[in-house]
Amino acid sequence: MEQNEVNFLDLLVAIETSNKHLSLLLAVCDRDRLRSSLTERYEQELASEGIKSYRVTIDRQEPSLFAAINQLVEAEPYLQAGNPAVITVEGVVSLSSFASEGERSPVDKFLGYLQWTREGMRQFPFPIVIWVTEHIHNEISRKAQDFYSWRQGVFFFESIQEETIVPIDVEPIRLPESETDDLDLPIDELLVYIAQREVAGQEDASLATFYTLLARAYERDQEIDRAISTWQKAINLQEKLNLSLELANSLNNLGILYDYQGKYSESEPLYWRSLEIRERELGANHPEVSTSLNNIAALYYSQGKYSEAEPLYQRSLKIREWRLGLDHPSVAISLNNLALLYESQGKYSEAEPLYLRSLDIDKQIYGEDHPEIAAALNNLAALYESQGDYSKAEPLYLQSLKISERQLGTDQRYIATTLNNLALLYRLQGKYSEAESLHRRSLEIRERQLGSEHPDVANSLRNLAIMRYHQNQYDEAKALLIQALKIQEVVLGDNHPDTQNTKESLAYIQANHQSQPILGQDIN
Image 1 (cartoon, rainbow, N blue to C red):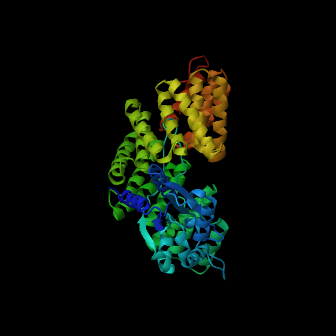
Image 2: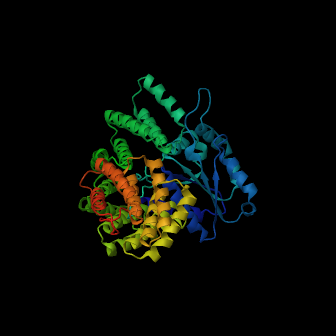
Image 3: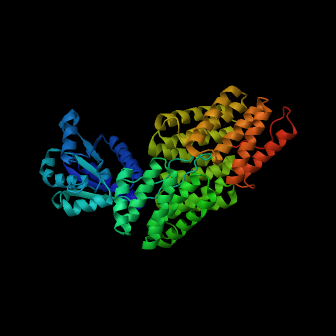
């Protein structure tokens, strides 16, 4: 059994057996997505046992554990009556260890409060799960030893590198892939810390860490060019200091950004180098190796190199099923990506069961209303569309779009993909006015999010050209195809299937403006 699963079951048993008396349980995890999924999972399992779940968030200005829990209990008659419950404490991981000169940092304040609030905690007869990072756990054990001695358990959960996800059949949907960091500091603050160290000539691991934090902050604010240059600074310093695994992570993240921009030739060597380091340092069957394999395969898929992508996807899936278990979210990603590859090759009967299994895993993990579910529904709809089963495809697209807009807003990149795919469906049904408005909305989002020279923008231009062709607007269709082809020739190269499709379509429309359809397949 994978170690995270063992530790999760230990945590679950500790909660169940310590109900109706105070039990301090420290859960240690450095990644917010993993923390969130584990918390949701034990809350669901405890609910079936009649144990009610509550969450409290530590205040950054006054980070008192006692005050946060006391405020919750005073507001909840159920807790005041001593009924079965578990309280999850969030927000500790976001407390900064940094402070202005002469001031105490939020973490130091939190640790100080722990020391003198221990006895006051006796009045709370509940198991209390406190999520912390490994760094904060170490600080508690050193600086709040009195409180730490009261713990009933410490449960460690290994972080798994986040990855490039290509979760859709007709066009790759890029979900947010770059790692988020628990230390979410403002860019201005990070720049000050970096400048202080650079001026002092302090080229050490802490400076490399600050570079990675700044790069992620730039990604968060969509300042991609600055993120790229900052990742490069981190890589240069990590190389100099021989920080191998940190270097592998930075190479992977920089590769993701180039991949996101459609700069595949710049992304590929970064992915391969990251894989080489991980295999050397971690072994050939480590989950982070599976992530690198997935990313390279996704890159090859984007370039139309299906025969090169397939064995990499299969190896990644095999590692994940063995090391992480059959129902792990990363397994769902691998199933989805392999299904996408099979669908692109017309292997529909092989793709459908993989999509369905992936969707089932996602529903177990995330519930019914989550961006991952929206992506999975979109993929399944696109498969049915490719098979001509429009009555199955349309409600899935609409459900996917509804979830995405509710969860992410209306201006996200992969919302544009669902809009595009729904537009293709309407065009195939002869609903040209509905299709055109969706195509144009998809194009506007992509140009705004990705810039005017991205392959996804070229796909939208080509699909809109086909739309205009079916409306007998031949000159406009030709102009749109020429615009799409210029992008594809530069970014994808002459031999990419998308480029070849556009060339064939353009050649046909130049030779024949009659009512026959443009040759070549739709780029979905």
